[in-house]
Every structure is written in C-alpha cells, then in structure tokens.
Length: 160
Image (tube, rainbow, N blue to C red):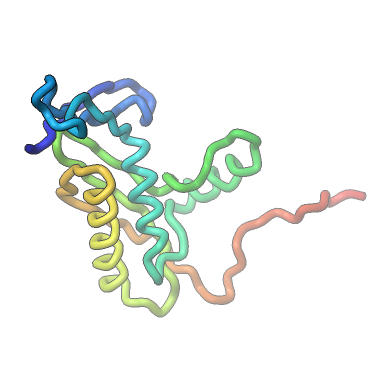
C-alpha cells in the first residue's frame, strides 16, 4: 500500500503550504494507514537545512544579506531560528525540490561537498517525509577563510 500525497494550503506564509499523505480508511485497513499525515513546507525546509549543515566542509547556509538579517533576527526574542536560513523548498503532491545557498570552508572541493550535501539532504528528506526529492540546487555564495572572524557584535555597549 502506498500513501497518496496531496498538496494543501497555498497561503502567503511559507509554513502555510503543506503536503498531505492519505492512507486507506475503513475497518479493513491496517491501523497505520487510517487517516492522513500533513507535512508543512517548513518541516521539509528544516530537515534539509539540518542535513546540509551536517556535511563536513559546509561553514554556513544563507547568502550574505540573509546571514546578516538572520543574525539580527536571532538577537530578537522569538525572532526565529536559523535552521531554514538559506533553504527554499517547493513541495508538490509526491515530490519536493530544494534550493540551498551555502558557504563552504576554504580548501575543500566544492564539487565534492556539493555532491555530499545533495546525497545527505535527499536521504534525510526522503527518509523522514516519504516525499521523492527531485532536485537539490546548490548556490555557493561564499568561501569562509580560516582567518575570518564571524560577524558578531560585542556583548558590552560601546559607551560606559
């Protein structure tokens, strides 16, 4: 038995879009297939973001401006996490596509890291959601040099 997947939502918020996995219904159907499971686009984005960050050679996700805005958002209480920064997903009825903006470490093979990211993201999303990942597009936006410091503001104010 294969679950049927249909698209639900379509609102203007990223979390409003979702995929629904519908099982067979009725007393004769196995218990695990009775009902439906809904997976929001944001869930797929979080899975893809976490999987990409786990790959050696990935320093960060997000283009320069997205990282700067994300750093400001982190300082605001309730501003949201950084797991989905640099991640865009499209979720259809049975398939998903992922776009990633990444920053790689200096000295790594970008081709090898990109291949590892694709493999890891596809494996994680398909295993956790049951959706087929049709593509993972990777844009390498920057290379992190060993002597570069992270852009962080001092904890103390400038004036005492």
